Image 1 (cartoon, rainbow, N blue to C red):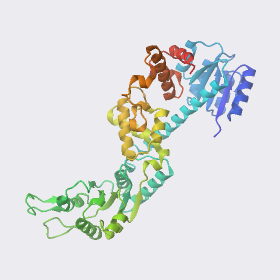
Image 2 (image 1 turned 30 degrees about the vertical axis):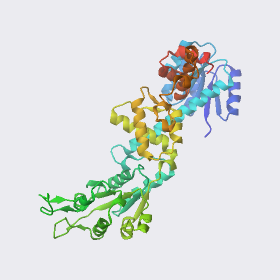
Image 3 (image 1 turned 90 degrees about the horizontal axis):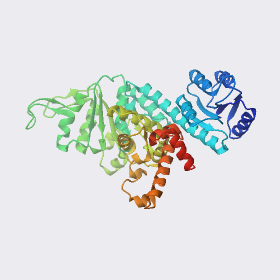
Image 4 (image 1 turned 90 degrees about the vertical axis):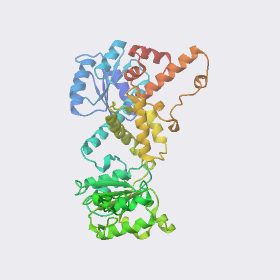
Length: 455
């Protein structure tokens, strides 16, 4: 979409120059000769950015800034002045301006500020979308808290929602860590029987000799140690949902008995002479290729077809990487709330590393990485050094001469300052005020350093 800019300046030559420059760069430009005219334009339509001079007749830049915040606090305002001081620059940022440019400025300087402002607007827009998504699922499971705006995930959500309306058996497939149990919980939560029990069991975590008694229960005296009657998992999930994770781990003899339960809707406790009716919805999941196991004789074909009435396949994270920014911010919100920490943002450079990783552990691996980063950061933003080395995070134990390329303290100080300032400017999207806070410098000191290092 074409970005719109409102230029407010009392100098006709400046208005003409900026109009020609910005139009050539693809922006739609309107102009005003003072702050009052600028407010009129602002009330008539929405602008992505406003370039506003500080000293003007009728209404100056500071008065416009105060009024503009009341009319439309979302518009990004960049102040300009040929007479400004450092104190004035700081004051404009305090009053809500995004940045401050001193006249005369170079073409590259104003385009750089606009590019940084566009990046900030993109992040703000994604944060608003994330908040809307979080608000939409607040107070309900909604597929266990899964989020995604990609076509693959939206198709998955629609299918799962449709499946939830019918008490049919569902086979959920996908790699480890993709969120198969979350989908199962979401289906249960969206079904008519959501108030009934949801019972989950990992079929590979129960010793084989205990599987039958765990699934079907037992009566007192059925075997040594059975000193009371005990319900099995099917009875515990009666009228609700039984989620069988890692279904491929079930031994063949128990697969026969499971098939009977699915067909007859009844179970017989170990040691009992009578069967009991159960009304259970079975959701099964696996990260293995069941058809291949059927061909190998490791899984019963009749049970596979009985489980695979409907199949929901969850794509691996690497196949819907466009969900990464939304997913990261959602996970950070969840982790920060659980840990009692402030919600952090993610620097563009750190996000780039996250986007480049292949994520063999899928969303589970991503959650672990982000929780680690959340704990490590002592600022308000996650930077590349807070990420593991396998993602490209900086190594902490490198020899200092390898890192700096010198033994000179004087040269090392300059190198470190330049690198830290560059990282802070990168992490804040070029916002000098926020970069100064990260660096624990005063705003004037940072401006001096930027000029010294020609950053």
